Length: 159
Picture 1 (cartoon, rainbow, N blue to C red):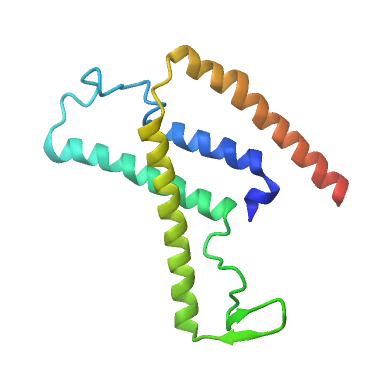
Picture 2 (cartoon, rainbow, N blue to C red; picture 1 turned 180 degrees about the vertical axis):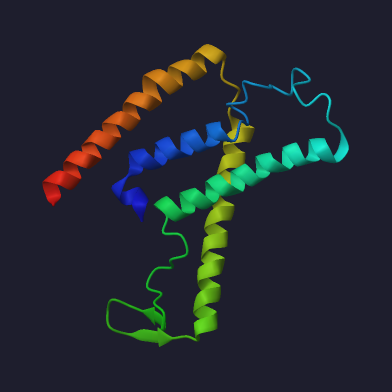
């Protein structure tokens, strides 16, 4: 579980992922609810494909968050042969059931993060351009550099 070791990295990755999807609250280039936007000349399926890529980006960011910070396909106490509990007991399962549980675990985690990204999109208002620049340059960049330096120092000190 990467979030235990890198909570600040998770938060920075989540904010950067939301910004990368170019949706509310980071939709400065288009602001499609107020202006027509740069999709004016597209209609039907061309416009639909542009909108579809926004949802694909959301699924991709959710998959990366799941993989990097929440163990990906891992289920607690689930080994290749079935559940192996720390108190010594085990519950043998077929290989297909174990793999199915892992796939379902990954899908549930991805769906949770898709829901979280949509919740942020539905809840927060749009940033003004100066607020977005302040967030990116004065908050996120220094925090990411400090996070990188502290992580490098800890890795060097612990090894």
